[in-house]
Structures are given as structure tokens and as C-alpha cells.
Amino acid sequence: MHESRGHDDGRGGTGAATAFVPGHVTAFFSAHARPDDPAAAGSRGAGVALSDGVRVTVADDGGGSAPGVVDFDGERVAVDPVGRVLDGLGVPGATVAATSDLPLGTGFGVSGALALGTAIAGNAAAGTTRSENDLVELAHVAEVEAGTGLGDVVAQARGGVPVRLEPGAPGAGGRLDGVPIRPRVEYVAFGELSTAEVLAGDTAALSAAGAAALSDLRAAPTGPRLLGLARRFAREADLLVPEVESALAAVAEAGGEAAMAMLGRSVFGFGTALSDAGYEASVCRTHAAGATLVDADAGSDSP
Amino acid sequence: MHESRGHDDGRGGTGAATAFVPGHVTAFFSAHARPDDPAAAGSRGAGVALSDGVRVTVADDGGGSAPGVVDFDGERVAVDPVGRVLDGLGVPGATVAATSDLPLGTGFGVSGALALGTAIAGNAAAGTTRSENDLVELAHVAEVEAGTGLGDVVAQARGGVPVRLEPGAPGAGGRLDGVPIRPRVEYVAFGELSTAEVLAGDTAALSAAGAAALSDLRAAPTGPRLLGLARRFAREADLLVPEVESALAAVAEAGGEAAMAMLGRSVFGFGTALSDAGYEASVCRTHAAGATLVDADAGSDSP
Image (cartoon, rainbow over all chains, first blue to last red; front, side, top):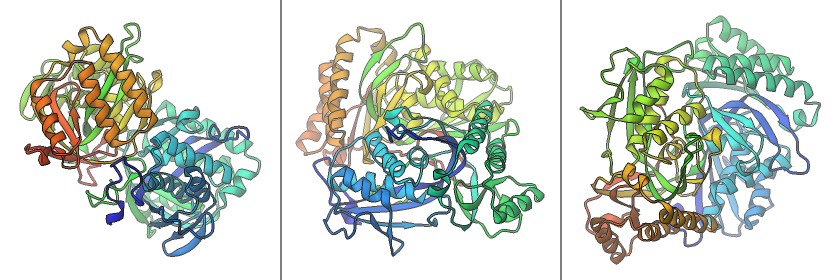
């Protein structure tokens, strides 16, 4: 893809550029609203960045149709945060096209990935010379304001197995740690669960459960503990759905470790947890890197 | 390598584990001593994480010989920070073996990589369940106390093109940003330059030059500006050596962009800068990910 070459020349935009953003499943979280300051709003919690992710190409060609409308795997989809990011970069008319292995709305951070990928690729395409922290903040604020997510963007900008110690963008109080593991990941998506709806409800019990889980994870950040705390969180926050409950029971019976992806009707596990339990699971790896421009020279989607 | 499997089981040590740590060239820096608090000491500045790096295997077998002695590409080498890291993990007798494309002592962050790789692999091998921030702090403090480096470890833990906004480990005030570029990198190493010697000297002029460069980079974080500021820093800090000076002149004549690697008798450039100028350069990529356990399942050195 010749249009995305030369994004490192810094002498203005390249016209078009592509970014890869890992998927992200949240294991547990607590919500932290800040109506006065969306950059400082967000969530605490933990999750896993996935090598299955979203590839976002932004073309600064003024050819965009309706604001925030994205070509997602060939379908025209309205993604509110994407329009906000393009506005923030000053290129509201840019065209955004994305391809992904992941389904929208099922707890894999696709909307966060679209926002962050648009920020990173859009910056290179338009030559707006923002820093990475600035681009993360732009995408994070877009997600928070759209009500589509609280913690995916900062986690997807980091990669690995991110632990969100303090909510918010990097320059607005946000602080991250990580669990030093890189497991193989299996997942199954049963269907959508509205993030906006859950976040708009009473989140007090959910946040208490999330805070307790974070504290227990920090005492010994390991893989099995992450998944065990995620299961406890899903029960305590009353978010379990029947398909997920059956899958978790089947995995436990097979001797594996899995949890529900927040917020979606989805399960994820480490190693061969889901296939051992008889599920036809998608398979990927923990993605060590955060979101990044795709290096056209390296010829790889997953730098 | 079967011994490194199962590092994600969290049920105690795996006996042996392997980590990959990207190399790191510093473009410019300012030194910030904190004799009272080595975790908060460090440097501000910017550099590039390299896909050429160091692969470190730690075996918690009690078979270590002298403290801090590492098998580095088959040679027995004493690396002070490595001994400190093993002490910090409580496994002073562990064996450390490393392989690398990079030469020691020439400005590619090999000693930082050995310290950080020992921390990450040692934690998995010994089952000490530290968080990633804790492991970065352990390696950072070891480098600072040994006098072998100030900023490589935190940069190598992040990956990409790290900008060190505030000195220190993640939990001790350290703050990072990044330049959103992922260039191909070429480099040539002419020989060693003692980090310890330079850092033990008068660093006031150097730090003033580094602070000015950081401020100018933050105003527009792009690739050409990073290298231009690095060249200005090398002149102002009076660190240029003749081989590097000739290489920079040759690259400029050929229309490319390169800079001196701090601290080594080495040059690095983006794209084909050095080969265009007639140098037989080593070639690698910007490494998007920070240091990480090698996923034995994925069968790749460079996760």
C-alpha cells in the first residue's frame, strides 16, 4: 500500500496512513465519571490486549460522507467516537475504512480501536504532528463523550495485559501497570451487550466489585488470578448472561480458566480452555505492543 | 524451548523463562541524579526502541557462578545490574544466559536490556509474581545504582520511539510519551564509549542541551526533528567522536538523516540513510512493543 509509506517523514501528511490497534477484553472494571473533565474520566480495572484487532486506514482526501461513518469490513457503520476524533484532528472530511477479525459490540474494544486507530492513522495522514499521548487522549475523550467506553483506549495504546491503576488519559492522571504474562487466548462471542446502557445505569455495585478485584489482582498479578477475579466480578456486578454462564461452567468442568468479556455476551480464556470444553473458539495471542502505525516497509499487520 | 513454557500459569515458577528486550538508542538526554532515591533518578530525553535486541534466559537452578556474571553470546561477562536484579528477586544463584545482535558498550542499551530481561524472565522462572511496573523499577534501580544507565530501562519497557518526559521508574514519578512513527532503522557501531565515565563527569552543559532538545521535540514530535535535535545535542554536549562526525557528514551529503547513539561510538539513521552514504549498516525496525516474555507457543523472538 503505497499511500501509507513515508508516514515518518514528518514533512507534512502522507495523504493516507494505516494503524493497527489490538482488540481488548476487559476482565473487570470500576467506572469513574468526571462530567467536568472527560480526559480524567475513565475506569480502573484489568484486561488483555489481543493480536486480533482492527486495522484502520484514514485518507485525508475530503471524501468522507456523513460524520463518523466508517467502512467496517465493507459495511457502512456510524461510529460516534470516530467523528469526534476526526474533528479533533481538524480533518472532519477524512475517509475511514477498517477491517477486523473482531465483531462490534461484543466486548472486544472495537469502538475504542476505531477511535484510536483513526487518531494514529489520521495524524500521519494529515501531518498534524501530535505526540502519542495526545493521540491517546483525543481517542479516549471521544469514547468517554460518546459513552461507548471508558478504559479500552488507554489499554489498547499500551498492549500486553494492562492494569488500569488510575482512570484517564496519560496526561490527565491515567496510570497503568501490567501483568507480566503473554498467554494464548481463545474467545467466543455470543452477541451484543450495550456498553452505553450498562454505563448509564447504576454502577455503584459494579464499581465496588471492580475496585475489590483490582486490589486483589495487585497483591499477586498472575493469569489464573486475573480470570478468577473476573468471574467473581461478573457475578457480583450481576452482569452474567446465560450463554456465558454455561460456557464458564463447561470450561471449569474441563479444568480450564475463562471469564466473561466486559461488556459483551462473550467469553475468553487462556491456553486451550474453551476448545477443551468443546467450544469452537477463535484463537489469538496476547498482543505485546500497543496501537501503532503499520510499517509499510515491514509488510506486517501486527508490528 | 520447553523450559520456558507455562510461564503464564501463575502457580509458581516455571524453573526457566526467556524474555526479549528491544535495543534502545538514545538521541539526546538530560541527567537527573537523586542520590537519596534511585527509583526517582534517571533521565529525560528521547530515543528509538529497536527490533534488534537481547534475548535473556533465566534458570532458577541455583547454578549461578559469580554474582552478575552472564553468558553473553557464549562469553562470560560481568554485568553489575544483573546481579542486583537477581538479588532483588531473591534468586541470587540463578543462571542468566543472553544472546544479542547488538554489541555491548556502544550505545544500544544492552546493559539495560540485560537488567530488564533478567527481571522479567527471572520473575517468571522464580514465580515471584511482581507486576510489570515493579519489574521495571527493579531493573531501573539496578542500572542507576551500577552507574551503567539512566533511561534505557524505562524506554525499553515501553517500546516504540519513547520520549522520557519525567525521570524515574513508573511508580516513582517517571512519565513517558512517544513519537508516533515506526521507521526502518540503520546503524553502525564504531566502538565503545563509557556511559559510567560520561555520567560521572560534569553533566551540566549536557543536561542543558538535552532539556532544550526535549522542549523542541515536544513542540512537533516527528522523525526528522528527533534526528536533527540529536545532532545539535551531540555538538552542544561535546560528545561527538571523529568516526561519528564523518558518518554524519557523509549521510548529510547523501541527503539522509542520522545521529549519534548516546552513549556509544555509534550512528543510527532512518530509512536507508547510512547505506545511501556508503556504509555497511546493520538494519532493523523500530520495535513497537516493550520488553516481554517470549511466548514459547508463538515461536517468535520478537513478540
